[in-house]
Amino acid sequence: MFGLSKKDKSLLLVVAFLTIFAPFILNPFPTDSALAQFNAGYPDLMQRFVIFGIFAIGFNILFGLTGYLSFGHAAFLGVGSYSAVWMFKLLSMNVVPAIVLSVIVAGLFALVIGYVSLRRSGIYFSILTLAFAQMSFNLAYSVLTPITNGETGLQLTLDDPRILGVSSTADGSIPVTSLFGLEMRSTFEMAVGPWAFQFNTGYYLCALILLVAFYLSIRIFSSPFGLMLKAVKSNQQRMNYTGLNTRPYTLAAFVISGMYAGLAGGLMASMDPLAGAERMQWTASGEVVLMTILGGAGTLIGPVLGAGFIKYFENIFSKINDNVLHSWFSFMPDGLEDAMVFIVHPFIGKGWHLTLGILFMLVVIFLPGGLVEGGQRIKGWIQGRNTQKDSASGKTEPAE
Image 1 (spheres, rainbow, N blue to C red):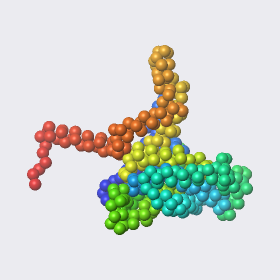
Image 2: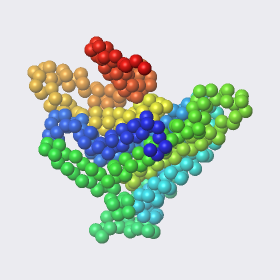
Image 3: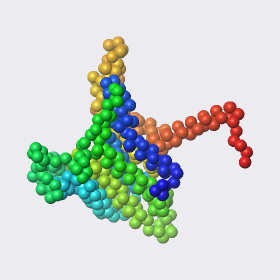
Image 4: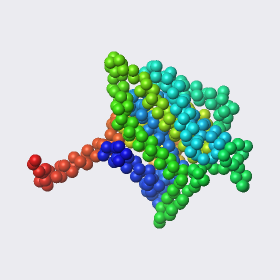
């Protein structure tokens, strides 16, 4: 199947299942229940899950395979967003040309930055990529204002030409992004008893692209090219001593990783046609590093899990306020209720970073391999218990 091993096929099917049935999986609680606060099955958040999953998959091709830690990948995310919005302004509201242009422009930008940055390795490479990202941010924020619209951000207007489209709709509003007429914001709602599920066109487009991006990453990991990148991570100096020039391989990985980031930026603009310089800040680059490490650097599904984990905390825990806490602890006496709210308050709302930071420390300390290692340990524990049960019941393997 698509040239994949049995293990990789199973992994691809798991990711496909999670993305296709995400509206059900992410809405486990009834709409009117107190725990509905933890539901995450609405279009905007699901789109963020898969878009940042693509971003993290691409970053993992560079960091997970070669060991080169880039602190400037947000530059490619921002470039991809700007490219997509300009395509919407000049050509049409069809998302396909915008996404294609985002990938191409981000790839060319990554080629330039990678050619310079990869002359150094280790911390020097990381600092160079951070410097390029900050220069890109400042250029977008001030110097390139005619192209980026500065701090306001690049937006669509009624004056945009749109050669192959319309500048305004019949009611005088700005057209919405679409896929050959199918609007990205189109959403079908299905009510099943006390549950409500939303199926969004834009989300499923992003999910389909995520599956393609994930499949390509599997092929890269298992290809001779991927094995060469792993060798670079293992001992690049020894490879150089053999006379093998590793720079073309690392540069190719850097460009591919940048194209993934550009794809993510193009999808972000396709779902919400706005591009701002804040997407190129160093904090955005640091976020994808956290996603990859938290999920499991060097693994296939780890970055996707890490992206979903962080975006869930960012969007769910940040919305919990004191009123929600009081409703949760309302069954307690007044004094105890206020005390519980006081204790929990620093960890939710604006303090969600504190909760995420604690969880990140726990994962790094106890699960160096990330969430994937945690899953592997649970699987091993379950298999061990089953083996013990079989032994206790007197079951033995037949002799050969």
